[in-house]
Length: 517
Image 1 (tube, rainbow, N blue to C red):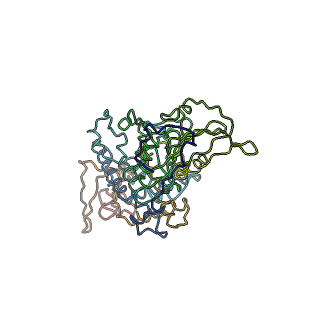
Image 2 (cartoon, rainbow, N blue to C red):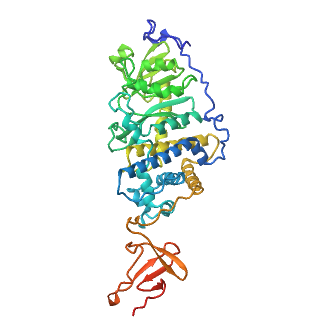
Image 3 (cartoon, rainbow, N blue to C red):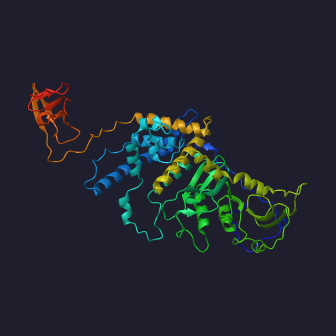
């Protein structure tokens, strides 16, 4: 087949199927489905989930720690009289946070604080033993993915402004890793999914026919196992790629297919994307396509666009243009299909003995392969945590985290591992906590407020020992022992050697009862 043949030439006209020969199908020349052993030869069925996880996440964990600490220090610089600064977040603490987030997917609750609740209905020791609630909420509050100072130099009014700049590095890193370590199957599907989100973001979508009507739209391309090979967030009308000849959906599919060119993949899509121009362009890149199509698409036969057919149940009408086949099949309603990977079916009326319309092979093949994206979305959302209080960047990041874990599971399963998706996630949480336990210990933060500048320390000498004391104005360092005889006796604890002293005109041991004259 000549891929350089121009489908817009004078001979490229639609006609009945008997005027054209049989369709020649591209031969698939991709690698073995599963792990790309050239990139990860050490990976086998005995590898731990954490080892697979770190193939994708090594660069991201460093980015999270660096940008979270940067954002926290920027916050402190803006507040002159804020709370005492906490130590910087370490990689170990970030792994603890992510492990807890993954575990929360098995036990969704209305509020984050409920995971640390001591009520009998909520009590789960795992969360309080892993990390204190305030530490968890502090890291989550300042979780960040890019330097905010870089955004001040960008003009938001230009067409090239990237609305995803805050999390763009995460998406680029993961998309590169998705391609690097996995060989997808021959049959692929492209579709859209919605990440449920009702907060404020300019590219939030409302799709009434979806189960999740409000949220952030993501275009994905998935293989038969549900592995997400590439993804792209919908940020509004793509003014930089769309033009008079190329629609925004055309540009989106073309961008998502840049990683699968040249090996003979077969791509399935619905009528939101399908068009004759798109199918012709992808054919030049050795990608054949099949999908439903809207009858008013530019380039379809005139009788399709005018809907001139009056079909009965089971009727099929076919038009062919070189390697492209358009058909309409009557079931409960008219179904319009477009393909360049199948031979054109025969026209006529086809029903079984019960009067049910016989499904054409093109429609059956489309139904078999089109659900890959929905399959991946169902699996990724099986154990995802639902919370209404996160920023859109956090919401999107944790969805991508669930998606990456699913890809990790599929990649390890291709090596013969018998773990289920649930068991894989639980094992990953355990591996994360074990890895965090081997990390460097965090510097302990002193309790209480930082003393005022005027509150100095003084020294008390007793029994050849020097005790350095804090000022008695600190409520955490003193208490009134007795008010007998209108005299206040104050206990003070030494910060150097933990010796308790009583100051009432004489020194007395902390554990003995004070006496008064």
